[in-house]
Image (cartoon, rainbow, N blue to C red):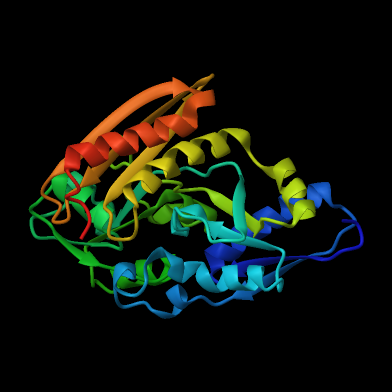
Length: 304
């Protein structure tokens, strides 16, 4: 691919462009003589900021337009925060390349650096997902949980304007934006299980573009790929979407992958949990098995 220019499609937010630049740098190591361009694409999810994603089309809002550009051959590679990608692949596209995972944990940002356990009764906590809300409510149900949307800077600004007493964000985004000084507390994965694929940058291409597929295999991070395979299989079994309050996280120790997941009922009052381990060669099956276990536990009481 020495003579061909590679075009990477990305959302135009500050964080998305940092992810795109990281992907570009990885590709440049392989393609030193190839021009690589980043094309900014504004998605519907970037424009709608006042309602939950589940009310306006779900996770696909952040990737649909980028995927259309990829299908129409206006870009060669699409960059996504994996947690924003629906678990079912768009026809004609393939997502089999993942950069090394960033820290998947969640962080609390609050006034005066108050820890979560020390927030006053009836404090207002801003969160963008049912998963985070139900997980936090399971720990402290004396707080108020309200929707917050917008990019990281916008959310921190809303906190500073005292619209919230605290907000929950992903550590990966805060760290990449060098906003760590705002962090009041890093929540462990034992306290708050992250979203499947949280902290992972995914590179997507056309399934039939063999040349790009071959190139992406060379930058794929193997352990991240194995983890993602297991975590997203849980979502596939449960047909998980924006309204599915589910946390999934895996960790790899030598040749063993340990995966744990929790699922909440529609109203958040019931919690279903399961964890298990397998050899990494069976990561695919592990995700499917844990998904089936949660589905059985919940009797389907997690979707409308």
